[in-house]
Image (cartoon, rainbow, N blue to C red):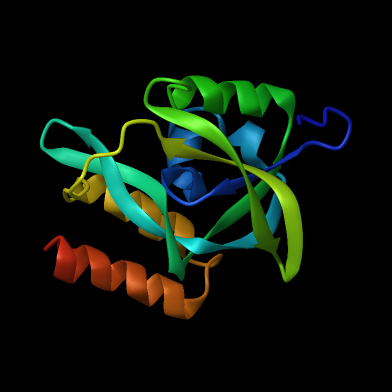
Amino acid sequence: MRRRDTGTLYFAYGSCMDDVRLREHGVNHLFQDVVGRGVLRGYRLAFTRQTGDCAYADIVPDPRSIVEGKVYRLTSEAVDYLDEREGRGKAYDRVWLEVDVNGTQMPSVLSYTVVQKSEAELPPPKWYALEILRGAEGTVSARYLEALQKKFRQEFKLDV
């Protein structure tokens, strides 16, 4: 359900929240229309995409949890970029979710989830955790940011 005239709402919960990473990869011009904070209910942030000895972010169903992130309005060019970056159909696949955006329930927001989830979580690389934290700061709630920091420090033993 891509809306070329009004853009596609996209819920970023990992490194795509990070303006520095987007700038370093030369795609920040695609992510200029920040709508605000998104809250995804019934999911939790997990690290289920394993590559080598580390893992990358995913959203997995969990009725007692939420995931917060940054919501953008994207052009079709930006969606095409994400499809390629996320390895659509191989590493990650598109999902359309109901996300609370700045207090309003939006019924069809694009995000990505891991295709073949690992059973156990592995720690993300420190640089990746820092990208997520940097991108989350100023967008997600203070409580959620604190929970992310705690997860990285206590669960994954990362010095972030």
